[in-house]
Image 1 (tube, rainbow, N blue to C red):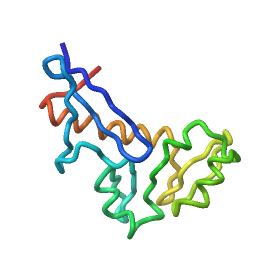
Image 2 (image 1 turned 30 degrees about the vertical axis):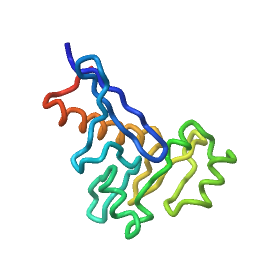
Image 3 (image 1 turned 60 degrees about the horizontal axis):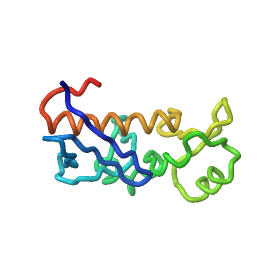
Length: 137
């Protein structure tokens, strides 16, 4: 049987736990932190950064660093929450073809669920690194 993991995708931070001997263990990332910032960025050279790497360069690359994206998932662009967010963040939030909120960075438009999936993949990678084998299910 494979490993059982649980991921908490938070608006500000995310974490992942692995069940070991019937007990959940919160997994530290490569930096030793048990939480990872729920941030996604595209660096100046086009690399995708997640978590602490994204946070470290957020001040110098604020237009290409998204955070708090979870609160925009499933919301219409003209909703109060999205309009309030437009005033509070340096990155560009644009209207998608389905009237959804999307994030534009480095000339590419990302859906909010797409950014959430990128963060979730990173959390899965952290768990796989911890257990030393792929997590498939």
